[in-house]
Amino acid sequence: MPNGSNVEGVDGIMAAYASALHNVALAGPTLFGPVINMAAQIAGQPLSHDRSKIFVLLIITDGVLTDLQETKDALVRASDLPLSILIVGVGGADFTQMEILDADNGRRLESSTGRIATRDVVQFVPMLEVHSGRISAVQALLEELPSQFLTYVRPRDIKPSNLQVA
Image 1 (cartoon, helix red, strand yellow):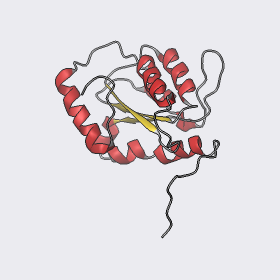
Image 2 (tube, helix red, strand yellow):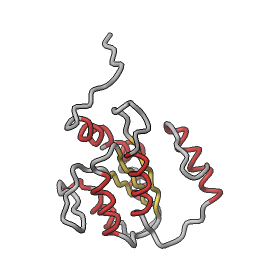
Image 3 (spheres, helix red, strand yellow):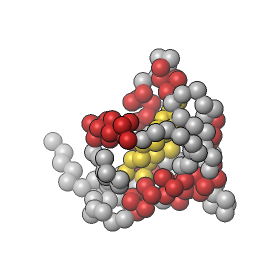
């Protein structure tokens, strides 16, 4: 996959992942801030007149974050954009920080300037829980996506386009 390419659907994600496996070596440091900022830049561009579109960033990580505050700052900024971030933790690393990023506890993230995220944009799933049979990977990853989408479109009064009722 060329740098900056978009993919559509699960098949596109799987093809991009397969391609990346052949071209990427996993190594530290684990920096999410720059990746989230790039995704936010893309999501913030008027790429389409379809305001009901949401962008999804999938991050697969095997390490502990080394830029937690930069990542929090990027996520708070991204909370105003049509962007959701799915994070999959692989391996046995301590993913406590990822749980902090996923605002499932009801507390929204706060940036270094004191700004509070307007909505939760992160869903984190540790693969160890999936492999243990406790949850389905796809179900766990996509579980919050509908509510994240709705918390973006409802305050902006964005209505579905071309809605046909049978």
